Picture (cartoon, rainbow, N blue to C red):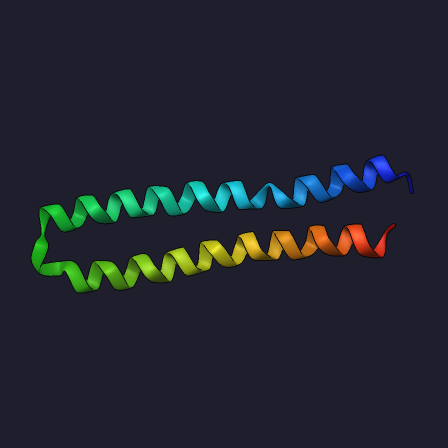
Length: 75
């Protein structure tokens, strides 16, 4: 397999980090908005935000691992 295609595949796999970053940013803005509207629900909103951010970040980490494996194993 050509090294160009391997590099393109790894680059596409790393793009999942951009999606995770956008998702975490949107979730944080919505959580801040929700806390501003209902300050008494702060703890519930924070728990949901942290769970969602952790899941989105796991997606980015999986993409990084796949890109790393593509570069190492297919070289």
